[in-house]
Amino acid sequence: MKLDHATIVTRDLEGARNFLCSIVGLSDGPRPPFRVGGYWLYADGRPVIHLVEATRPALEGKTSPRIDHVALRIDDAAEWAALLDRIRSNSVPYELAEVPLAGELQLFVSPAPSVVIEFVTRKGISISTFVN
Image (cartoon, rainbow, N blue to C red; front, side, top):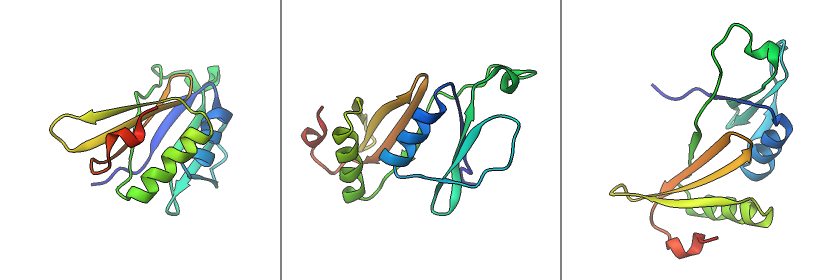
C-alpha cells in the first residue's frame, strides 16, 4: 500500500497553491470539473495534493473537513538544500525539529491559515545549516 494523495481544504486556495507550486515544486495539472473550486497538484506525473476551496457548499452534509498536516519525504540532500533556499529566499517562516531516536529532521511550514506542510529527511546534514 502507498499513499495516493492528500486533500487540503482551505479558505486561502491561491496562497496554498502558490506555495506548493513555487516553493515546494509541485505542478498544477488537470482536475475534474467538481462543483467547488480547487486544484490538483502533481509530482512525478501524479496528482498528490488535492486543494479544495473551503466554501459553505463544500461543507454541506459533511463533518468539518480538516487535515492536521501533510508530510513529504525528501531523501536527496541537494533537493533538501534547494527547498530550504527557496523557503528562505521567499521569507517563508519555518520550524525545524529533530525526530528523537529516528535520525530524521522535520521542517514545518504553514503556507495558508490552518494548513501545515511537513518535510522529512534523513539526518545527515548539520542541523546548524537549517537554523532560521
